[in-house]
Image 1 (cartoon, one colour):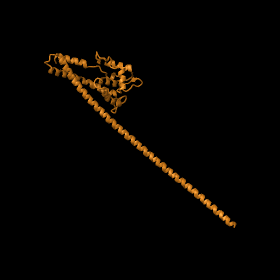
Image 2 (spheres, rainbow, N blue to C red):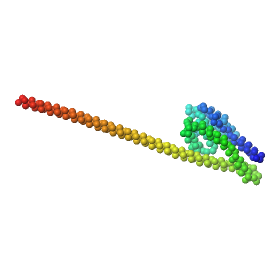
Image 3 (spheres, rainbow, N blue to C red):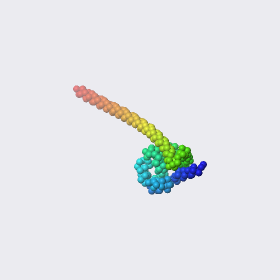
Image 4 (tube, helix red, strand yellow):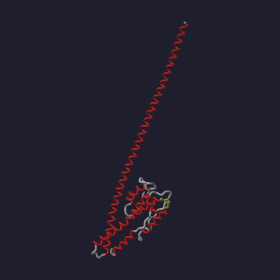
Length: 271
């Protein structure tokens, strides 16, 4: 390794070794807005460029806008949980790469399945963050090698160029192409996630509709059965009442006939 390459490697390591928030550093207690912004600044402030218009990594306005745009679930009684912090960290890293719309597509399933609950796989949002964090630490070396490879290609292709500006411009374009290609691939993956989520929700909605229809059918059958039973009972009651009335009428008629016969007999006896 020549001296120039060695210096570049040191520079790469210095610049891409960004501040990050370790899983164990995220507090388990609930925080108020000021505490959240202070926590994020404490851990990520060095990632902000010196000449940036934004002096803070996260502001109250940003958090309110994330909530308004449904990227972040609203706080409970103005307090933010550990899951809120993890969501904010995700938004922080994604906002400079993909659109707000894409971030929403990507994080909506996270909110639905893991926010303040265990997912279907039994994992919490904190456990998922820990797994991703460990993978990102390994990715650091891949990023370093990727930058070094772009520089090697630039030096090889531009070895006869005397203008240092042109060399750096070419190097930047090489890196930009790499970033843009990965961004496009990320957007493709986000679209796949969004499409899969739409299909999953359609299936769930269809199942729910079928279940509701089955309940209505069962209720209708039960209602029809009850109505039929009531009708049969009413018919039987009417028949019984009619029978009693007929018996009463027959008894009355028989009594009247007996009375007539008795009266007739009395008249015959008098003669």
